[in-house]
Image (cartoon, rainbow, N blue to C red; front, side, top):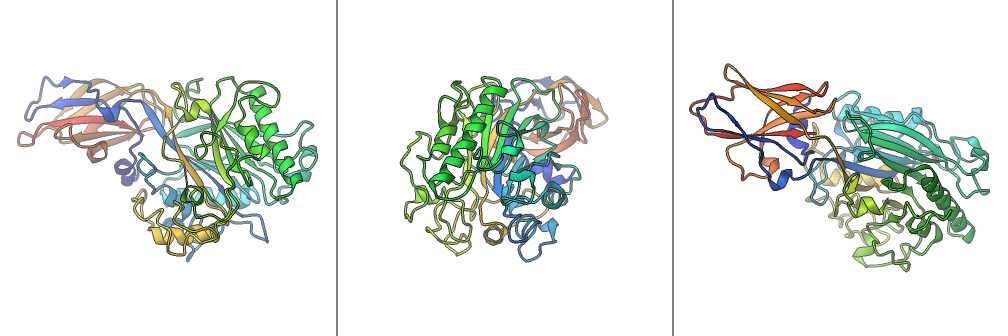
Length: 479
């Protein structure tokens, strides 16, 4: 396992701590501490939606800057925008790699998506860490090379299992993609649960990925409303009444009063069922009078804009979520307040300005190494400008995971053995230590790590017993 993983990914909110007085070799006491930093048992997930402009004007591969520096498109070990997202401190959350990447404007899975998967695995030096949904979405006329490219999805196998990839087609099927329905690019619905555990009602959630019809005419707006109605109707018919849902993608929306946007936020689905209502973290009160496509100096509007990276003027890319996710109803996926943002844009770039023009400060103080190399803010401003005409929209969520149980302790010479049960297959468990309980969680020092191969496993802390060393506390961390 790469060493950076153990030191940088603070991903579990519950830890079990043990007290060991200096020089005591027997009679260790197992104690549970209700510390503030270990009050909930959950895994943090980082989700991004990104229109990558990889099916237009002859472009089919990821553009320079997405998965490698703009200056060297083949240096995947140096990373690009996607790896830079993993370096961000988002609200209260420490840096961590992406867990879900929803894509728009790909050419196909083999041509566009597979290179992204391979580059992410190269950067993190972990073969198989990332993969993609194998379902090949289509577009109007059953083509994968029309309409600026189909939707797709990449995910982190260390943290998530993909349970299903389901196309959400108009009534009558893909023959009705286009003006007949308003849905031009096949909408995809992905079903997830945490990796290494059985899927259950308390940990399953859904992600809809869509790319609505572009354009400013009334017909274009009607088409977008048609696609939104298909999505909400599908959610109401096919999913449980209390399903946890994220609606992501390129909405091509001009203002908050537009019918398609309002359809996702409506309390009642188009077929009259009271479920699936979305919330916009940037418009929680659902103000219908916000115009995202006019010249403005308002920072509160500017920080929402995601297109174009080289001249900001539209808010096209969104992550909307059901009310139970946004308002953090216990028992499933929950939004982490304060993490929703447009990558590399905090409102310091003026309207119609480029994010690499020098005024942008979004990344200046938010980045930390979260992989083998560090990508600086200046490089990421340039990469994001070149990688696509859109900027990614990112948010963090938490999902419940089982609490590990230390069933017993063992001693082997000077080593301390932690025998653990209720583990998750494939999860990384790390023993951290500190000489007192006051340090913040990120300041605890890693002593031993293990990738669980099942529910029961052992962690060994070498040279744990030393007469001259101060007493130590130990904490078990899950990632």
